[in-house]
Length: 293
Image (cartoon, rainbow, N blue to C red; front, side, top):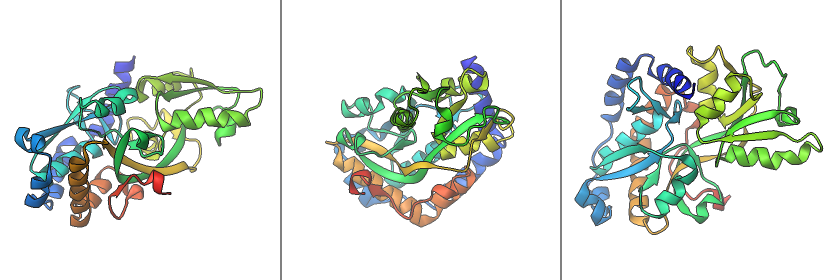
């Protein structure tokens, strides 16, 4: 069943795939290689010619699997390609559990995480974030909203499904205080696709996602028959970024420079428009913004 849902999400992302592939090439043609940024990369990265970022590819339109079940498509893979063009290296996207992604960056398994990870003060204790998108949290319910969910308080006394290790899971646990004796039953899953399956099959009344993923599910022709937003509210808006190991400041700074070029060139705006993310635009890349609020 999990594979069936992932396939549905992949098909939704791939509607018009051929056209999108051509548009990606057109948009990123505005991005130019920067010799100075390339030279600022850590010597090990320059020598091998690539970096590896880990992702959980179950979060369209940020990233999801194409119909072949192997290719990862979405806004963040496109952004990775643009970063690679500026830096003159390849940015490889590999799959792994979201819950251990920061630890795998800290131990050097991967150079970064590209998986719609929100910059938080707690996460900044483990990694340095370079931020490129703004988003809040939305509540997703079954089409027709059979349980009349309008806000977080309506989840009290009910089953809610969530991806483990996310800021949405933290939000639900912190919200238990308003429920009194009617606490939520919060079931946590390895991937967002697993959580959505619980909602679609009626075993949970809601799932919480970042607004871009929630909006995609509730408006795309392939999934909108199953899901809708409980309301227009976005809870606890923040910045999404790429975390890097604390001892990898050279790569962190080079990627920030690349993102600023992608934003100023107009390629960033084109990618946002293609994937329906214009509401999350930021004027420039930022670093460790959560601790600066």
